[in-house]
Image (cartoon, rainbow, N blue to C red; front, side):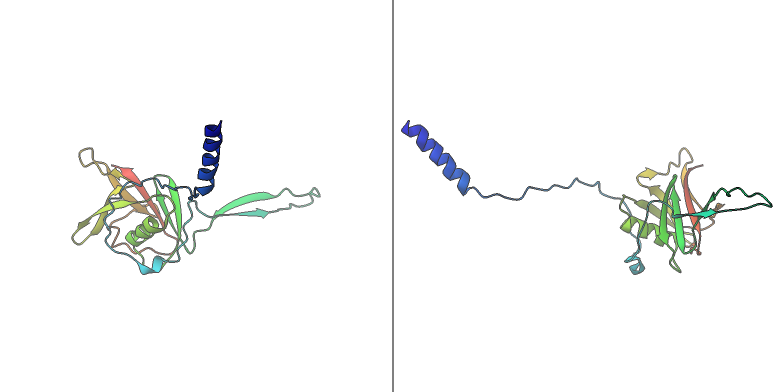
Length: 179
């Protein structure tokens, strides 16, 4: 009986002496990015990136002639792309603020550095033409099958590498993977 009481007192003593430590927080390992960092822009510190394009919905009403019924409102959807740079990669849309004298490369570097979702890319330099993308988010070009990353500016195929094309206000940059 004394042994049981002694064990209980000892257990109470040990539980009172134990210190509580905060729970261990572990973060999942993120695979190493194979991005070749070529340049960094200091102009990107205050950039806010959204995952979807900002859309403005306007309600309008119309009346016609002698119709006295209440007019039904119609909804018009208008994309607001002024003062924005839109980057579309395989159907995913990123909206970034427009900054003067930024190249496509600068915008992609900004997105890579600031996006809440992983975005990374690899490039290869061609003398006189600039940098060309060889991989986006781990999807690499396949020269044997003739599949490459191709970008379009306002639905027109680009003629320069991403480091040589300076973005204009309202440009939409679209990346496709294919022939």
